[in-house]
Image 1 (cartoon, rainbow, N blue to C red):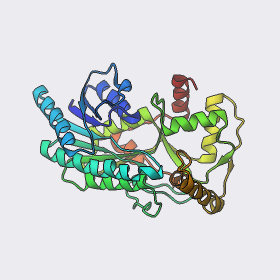
Image 2 (cartoon, rainbow, N blue to C red):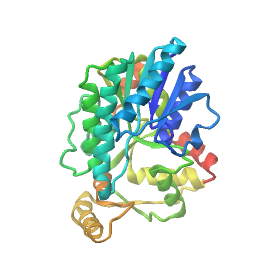
Image 3 (tube, rainbow, N blue to C red):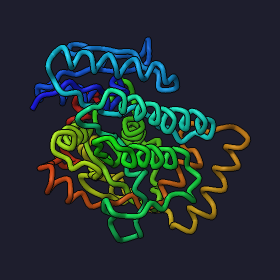
Image 4 (cartoon, rainbow, N blue to C red):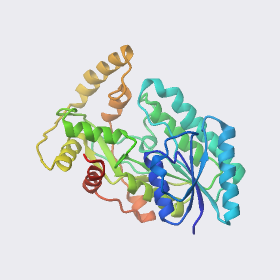
Length: 334
């Protein structure tokens, strides 16, 4: 079945990949983003654009009504993908994250109730799932355990997912890991790869683990969940799990063709007792942009996941990280 699909946050790193994936699958895409947003990654796609400011409920309602009217005129069912969110680990962005990630999601849910979509997909995050122990993996049933981390991004993504799955909408959620891939507008993972390649990150690796996935594979998993996912369920989209030590080494090997980096993993006790307090002290005097206390807190934890449910139920088959990194390096000239 093809549908008219409204995608919020359509101009972003994942949002533009979602629009490309949905359009290639034959769906009619309505791309929603703020007025005046940089939509360069959407150029050349056959889609409709609609302005939407998640901090303004009237704007949200108007965007969803426009997509619903377009779906009715085309004789297509209306589906909604709520992807827009503020991804930041800066102390100063906490209020904006609550306004967009939580209250913006609440506005989307309320507006969706009025237009009654046949499917609703929440693009959540593994940050809404939790963190594992040093050796284990989490699945979709894991109880959230990041409430004590003091990271507003995690808090707000968890609350947003609860708002959606706890509503009466025909909703499904996907929880991607750390997304890698070409990002012409820039992304945290792109900045990470560039710093690794140039040696700016040095040889010290955080003690935690990271579940990773390619951006195109994330978009494909999201489409499959939208089309096939069971209402009320969540699906983890993680291709593989890495210690930061192993990830740093692998990324440098792929990007440079040389297996020369031998990262040293910082012991967990030293990370908690020395690195984090130092970051908090510096952040209090001069707010940090990259190695913030929130980011370093998460890097010391184990974001490791079992994506078997998405593979079994959705038929999701992500590419290996090495292939994703090589593709990104070629496209971005790294």
